[in-house]
Length: 187
Image 1 (spheres, helix red, strand yellow):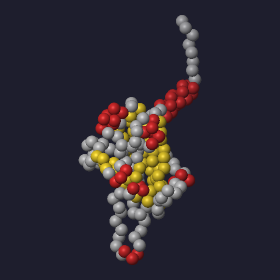
Image 2 (cartoon, helix red, strand yellow):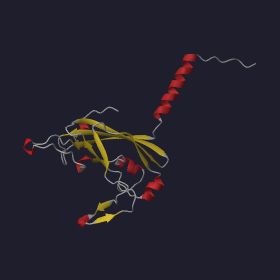
Image 3 (tube, one colour):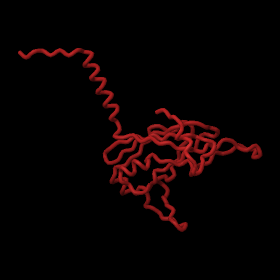
Image 4 (cartoon, one colour):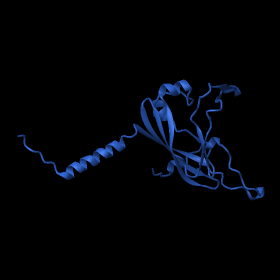
């Protein structure tokens, strides 16, 4: 009869806990985190004497759940994805967490044609279903501070987690250094 091997229960439990932590840590093939300054649209000057309506979209507040580093890794040229490229990559984007202090709007909804601007003031239309995967965040009127959106991106059989940290400020500095890069965000 072969000798019995006794393994202490504490050792078995710690090995199981290690395995569970590894399984949780391996949920995504890679995580991308980046930060965006966002215009806050704070208050109406008193001379207007009417409540200010929040804008529907803003170029300074646009962002994508497909950061440039991920697009380079997927070997996607440019930031516009045709239906053929989306299908070839098996690309899907799922929102895991919306920002808490505002709303996100798709800049290229599926029911609208996407156009790109070319030099010389010309535009070119892409096939129906083409998207840039670009959104705009319109923060709640009067809100200043941190916010965050989290996305799961699937492409080429892999899963990526994309965390977009936002710093809502009174005004985004055009061409200046990012104010959000000095912030500490928690995930």
